[in-house]
Length: 283
Length: 338
Image (tube, rainbow over all chains, first blue to last red; front, side, top):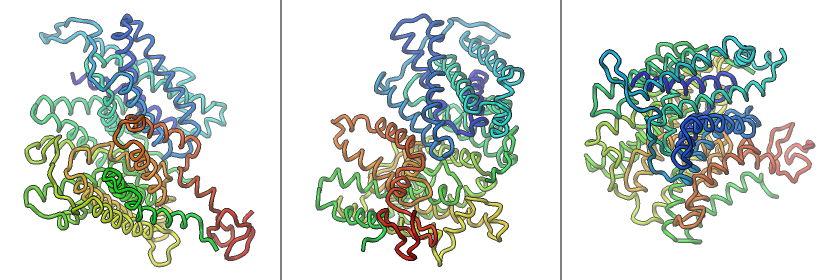
């Protein structure tokens, strides 16, 4: 369970971190896209009765498209104004929540496991859904890492993250790169939603709790660092799950301990575990 | 001779608030406006801390919630009356402001924002974990009112709001000859290293910003629970923190009036239009607010208040005096405004 929660946090945090690193946008709507994807999946599978594979195949690109459009038409025009961007993303997430409430009511929804049954590993019964989730998480993270490290696009992305102006001078179209980043980030959120939707309940307010945890993870690992996000995700998930397991009557404290872990790391290392402390941007 | 339009509008608006009970004495309308005045204090205190001194705080609900719970617990367990508990609540929030400084001041930029966001959530977890003492998700109901009637409450809150906003406005006024904090906050926000190089103890002023912001947010929180008649976990929630940010950025950050405009447009107007929750506006308040925010920001990224100010006021290029939009020449030095 730790691994599954950690994997989901890792997917979400990687996307969040990518978009922060490249566009310097704290995208508070990130888990809003996660919620949107979960709802779409539920809608396609339950209301329209589509096959699981088809539902996923439609959901992920659809949410990615929404993310890219939102970035292109809502965030990019005001990217210079940091406070305005922040508020824009909050407003976006709130609009998503209200839309989902209006369309699908605020009831809790459940999805069946994508594959039924369980496997026995070292005498422990593991539900197949967990294995599937974990498998997809690993595959997706490896793909993202390959894109970042090996392809031309990845080099462009990292160049933009380091210095957008210089990247622009070198012939990289910054707005296009940022749009691609946003696309990857939302796609990651959508994949996270797809793999975790059967395990968590789906309701309009489901974006706030992961948002907090994602921020904790990203800060712990260091803003803008993909490696940090992944390691941070598993640390936080481990802390959270051990609190739930060791003190079942105080499950509310799981967030407290997760945040406490972050505060301790920040006090020792103000830039997070793997963070790059950005040079103070003096203009 | 007409004065500067911005100030004229502020005075007219204040007078309108004063005589508002003459127009309508519906208790629900007064209630909305009472809460608005408290939200104004809350939003302006966020603007002082995050807008002016640049310490962008994502967890302003911490001060609000701490004060709310302090007043409520003092009444519940010790039976103290509001006139004693409200100042204590505000002071405890101030103390919390000092405590949060120490981890917060080591960080800057987005790290600071995300760290401060964590504090109220931690406290929320604690509140939920000790249900017997704090009431858990049901909160602490049954607190006394601060005045016998809604009208009394309205005027008390309006008075507190006016005084608080005036104090915070003076404290952040960079042009003031007597109080230096405004100028120093601006300097810290623009360039902390340069401020330090000029011999300003920036840490001390950052702590001061946390103290002032914490005090006024706490004041708002303490009054809020007495107007509401009870406290709940919503006072500590992330939504509460974001509300301050939404109002301020919507109206225009780093401007006291921006926060006021934000609250009265996004909260009061939408609430008043949707009283009773029977019409379309009443049922879709949050959606309308979100769409309004998105549209306004798209066309006025500096905020509604700043946009309007730029339309109606013009700064003299020579003596920096603000002039009405109808003037061709500065009213003091006669320099051309074009």
